[in-house]
Image 1: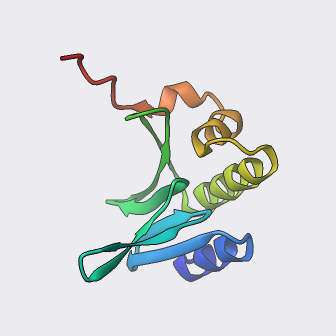
Image 2: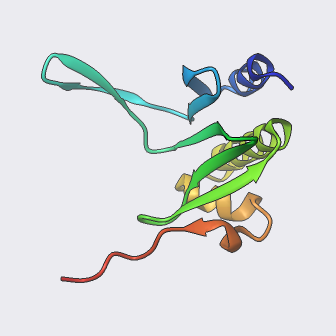
Length: 119
């Protein structure tokens, strides 16, 4: 699968895709524009990223709070995973991190981050 094919596959699923370069995707199920000064900033409650890192692809999917799930694989595998996550998200409702937990096999092993210390 090429990068262009990956983008098209996601968009055909109704998923918004923005690319900051040839190998970096910002992916969202929905977004809104918020005015910040003179600029409009795109915000999303259901976004993830997909990018090429050295010789492999990585998807960073949301976890609860400050946690993320970082999954590595081929572009084909990760696009299929992201499509499955967003399909489940639309069907089940609720936050995107719950759809990730339901779709990603052994989801806990991909958790990154931690709980901030209490002050």
